[in-house]
Length: 103
Length: 491
Picture (cartoon, rainbow over the protein chains, first blue to last red):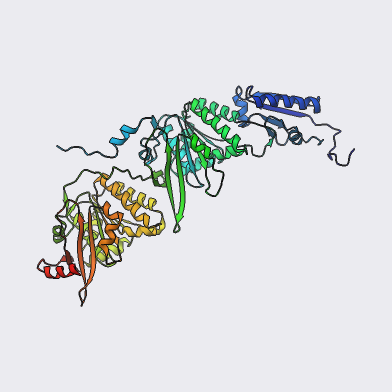
């Protein structure tokens, strides 16, 4: 292991639950779906669950989570949920939010 | 038969009101906006912190909701409970209204702490607004502190695009929308594109001059409608926001031919038959020249005819004025006891001109006087500036004209060259009768003189009239002393 590696213990690997709030099929929402699916496929294989909520259809969920901006990714956590807004084009930012080791 | 005189409320509004409007219910604002805000359009309230943007928006929404049009209030900054408490402080019980399902206050917390990754937009917000609008069946909306929402984009171009998207969406929903935006003079970021986008822009300003804070409202633009331009002073009172606009045509008033005595028969003659009922009179002169004496003489005479008089004093307390008057044989105690005399003692330094105006205006409404005395309007200078004297006088004259209240103002001028100085003032052109008082040195003593500079519609004397103040009030010298008067005129 390299000296600069993230100083965490990854033997017991974390399981991630996501809620992705999108607004129909507008471009940023489409892109966010694709980016999140890729991330899960490439880095969180078998340890993530994605729920997609379309705010245009499910007003109550959007209201419950105070979703003003779309797309919004909610990373559900025991302590506090982490919110990532945007189409998730910047994967490094998402990885940082997920506390994944830096590349 | 009397031909009705055209007044502010009649002519211009009907002609110019081309677009549908909704009333705001805010005292004085509908007059400024010639009927109200544009129905189904976007209005911008722009102002610094503490100018009352939120409260103005709230009062409008509350008024519409009370009238049966449900409204939605969305705040991007303050919490709903804080807004409810603030609304209650100006007498708006929003809680009751919310329970009746006609009104809703929501706080939308902007996720400023969220991680950003790539582009996003406000579609979620629109969905939330739509859901709440439908639940209420609302037609009116206030979006409070839109600048806080915009800040999340951190990019001027994106802010602009999202605002246009929001505006288009509001229009599609046919909503009458008020957006409030904070503006800081020192801040460069001013969201100037909002000024182009909105159909009506109201600018709110708060300034401090001479330790007294004053607030001003200014309509910057109103598409498809005329409005009263200029700055309008306003007060955030316990009963809501109050504006005191001066409408250009209100100075036209039905000419009242009824005369009111000055309280002294000789002076009535000098003026040309006394004052006109409902006219404005200015008594001007240096300190100690007898202004207050003339004012209380007028007051006592009016009260003795059972006409109610409201005496506003910026100079003395009621006790001091009454006992001083008694010493020259004018008993105001009896009128006070009989409730014919109302008294309002105000300290000029305590508030701005608009607040004083509201106090006087409220006292007029509560007491319902036939006549008003203000002693001395020059004290308004201590409220903020020289300008305050004019602001107060003009608005009081407008209020009194509408109600046909005779108003007598005293004005302190410490220069001997009064005629020149006063006629050069804008104040002089506002009043119907202008009387000046002088001290004259005749070589052995100081004598009092009175001159009527103007008295509209009256054949008044052009002479300097000597008078004295005795234990029985004022007394004018008999008319034989014309030689002396001529001498004074020359000097």
